[in-house]
Length: 168
Image 1 (tube, rainbow, N blue to C red):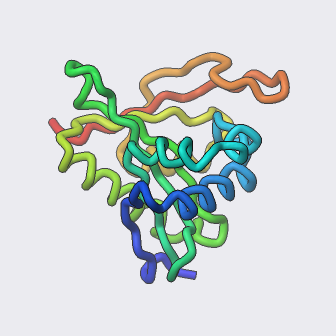
Image 2 (image 1 turned 45 degrees about the vertical axis):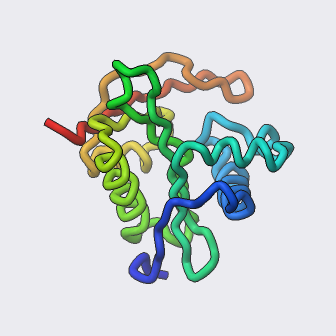
């Protein structure tokens, strides 16, 4: 499957079923890749899901099926509003190794620039080497680590903090 037939777009507040489907798939299929747990999200009400869509969420579609997701959390204090955090990054396994993840990131970056965001930030667990390599290839640099950023069944896993400047 190639990424060339994929449509990527920001989903609306009314599209919670699409969001729920791809987010729960991500948490179920790749539990070690996220700070959130499937069990925490599966019980959310429609109102809670809709609330999470107030921040931009981009979904990649293969025909009408969601196959990737990427969210953006903008900082709200005036002195920090030029920054946003990349969250919920997931691409279905059958689309990895294509251009889909890069195209999804490009869509988010274009949106962020249009919103006046100068800097994207993210945290990736130190054990997720594929994700770290992807972010490096796309201009993110490591700026620090949070020791024991995640606890997974009593395992302490460091978070790697990465940044990509969109301006300057």
